[in-house]
Length: 103
Image (cartoon, rainbow, N blue to C red; front, side, top):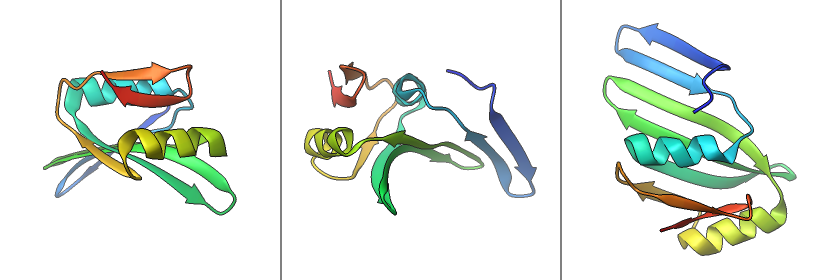
């Protein structure tokens, strides 16, 4: 996982790790290693995919990777919605470097 652009925030209530990347494989690896949620959404006229993990007192987020409308549509169909929760060890397959399906 590329953590070169990670920001770690240590606060009284926990540790927050924000990762900025444009590589979908970072989300794939995070889901496998930690579980968590993958979210696809529209922001203005752009489409994005993000990852979140909340495991008190630790929280991690991979910020909105830009995707296109076709990727967004394929991902929503594959997940059956815009948000999907995964358990640690879940293997996601990246189809044509465009969208994820569970293996």
